[in-house]
Length: 282
Image 1 (cartoon, helix red, strand yellow):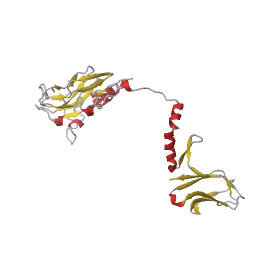
Image 2 (cartoon, rainbow, N blue to C red):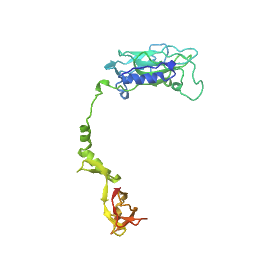
Image 3 (cartoon, one colour):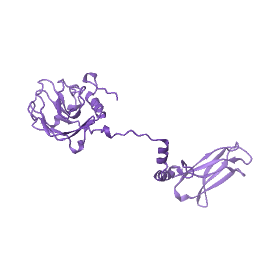
Image 4 (cartoon, one colour):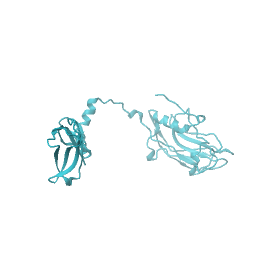
């Protein structure tokens, strides 16, 4: 696997890209939906010992599972003039860390964007620190405390790389899976869409309800489809060789059944033999 990282100076969403890279390398929270390693506001006081609380949980880092105990973390004091975005994460040794972002003026400066939608300040990119990212913290300029709106959950579920199995399927495997009883039943159900499973030939094909060749001894030939007109089905006709005659299929009825009348149209070929297939839909 070729690894790469992106830095904030590259002009991209560096942390987002690097999180995807690290996740593919087996970094993540084992059960984020279950509350593993959830970050919440504790005192909210910047520069103190208990700005945030991190719940206990398991983190997965490149083949190793770390059981992390609940604990408090500190976010350093605010910059007097510019905001910044810090990142709370679990490192490769299973320790919770905080990486300070670089204080910068907001970009764009105004508008309806939320704190975490601004291009600048960018969050710490962790370009040289493979990590399980837990949260982003927006630290406004010149404040003493932060609140819930300044906290963004960034946990993602781990991909357990040890559980990913490389397997190879042969054509025989695929054929067996395709032609088992359940597959045949499913294919048979598709007959309503003009398809049918042919058990004799072990293949899927068109749901042909009538076919020729037939000779048009009087310029036409009536095909009784043997299905009542009340069944709600539709039919299409396909032609093959017609001995040079131009022919068409006309939908009609006979004895209460659906029928197709095959008619020679603008030619005068003596008793042409016509190949045809009629397919049922619905």
